[in-house]
Image (cartoon, rainbow, N blue to C red; front, side, top):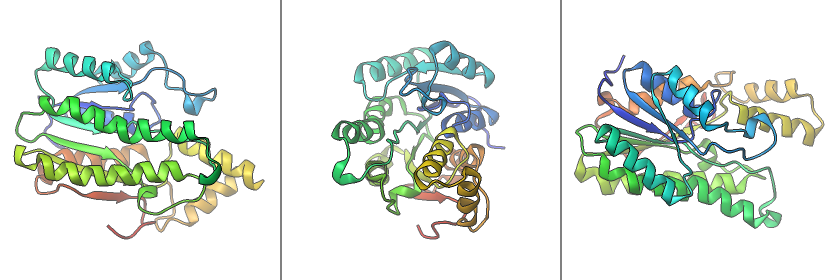
Length: 270
């Protein structure tokens, strides 16, 4: 167990119970942190995998881990400024920032991709991360402050038909490295995580799409995915959360500017 008592953490994109963000929030709370879970609290599509949920549902999730909730749209500077003001007034500081909010559009060739969707993906995943960092950094004044950004294995290895996602996650990796340099003199560390196949609603959506496109049984899609992973299984949100907790902890005090894979061995490189 890490000692996160009296630590205050903000996790963006954490409003889905079966998502990586909420898994991270839960694990940080398990280690004693006061966790603020944050999401946009509006539906971005018709199916369950795209539904974020209402403000009341977000409050319910926060209550499950003894934390607080914060409605925040990472593309809207006004809501981010209000979020920073809330954290300052309630807690006076912020120890840990986890930028997990991101977007994954439906598969399209880059050549024919809807440009509005391209811009939306970049705006949420890349620009949103920067916007949150800009407003939260002034609150990260305590010793041991740290940032973790959620990138992806797709930010290191290209995948056809999901170019906007790959590009936005690759940009997150570079943003993290530049940030690590810039905040090091303030004693703040910044790292990125690069998950592979993780058992979330979003991953399930991807399997469903692949099943339809390839006219292939979804169980076969999942079985083939597992076979491509050296450890022969799909990861879980809490396994990703364990990595994040380590990177935020004092045990990782000499680690910064890294983009760490957590993919069961699919990408055996740094």
